[in-house]
Length: 233
Image 1 (cartoon, rainbow, N blue to C red):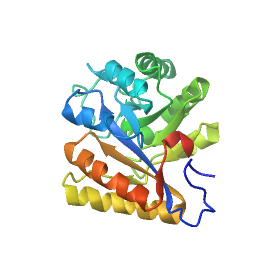
Image 2: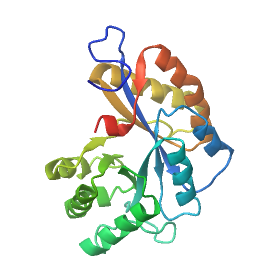
Image 3: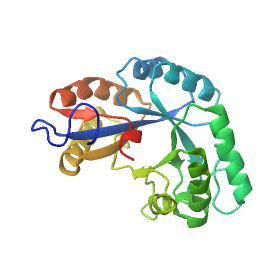
Image 4: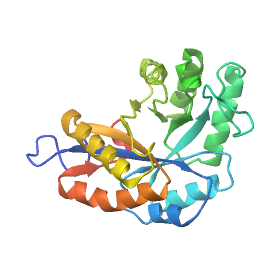
């Protein structure tokens, strides 16, 4: 059985939707508070190493949200000045990768899993993903592949290692206007309906918040259920 409200044998059941909202940790503003005021229908992904990373984790945990680490991983257009603590695909050895992951979990100890922030280059590197998967297995954490590249090795490697894992099916807000977000959310619901469940990733954007505040109750009324990613990996 998937989820907690419906079963797949329920004639009214439409599908299970798993939402992750990325990029918590940079700020604590009205948009963040808006997400915190919602029902617990999504997992919160926090980037480690920023001024609000730890405090956002503590607040989200006190509100019973599921929390994961939004781990910075090297993209092909990596700018070493723009972020810190990235998992790099060539210049870090296994011990250095482990140190960066351990620091992230020390900062956000309530996190139950991890997904990748950027990472088009690192997630395509089997060595890096093997190291990360081994560490996550030792920690008892899951990995959600954000699929920022078609060349990703993350999901396959994690499954081989026995790490609970899954993949992102839809990005909600690559185009930030409301109509586009609504269309992407509808696509996510269609995938959940045909496949039993689907995972969508959005970001802490004001338009995304407004759409989710309006559309999640409608989708629930239409017999979709919303669960944390840990329920389906």
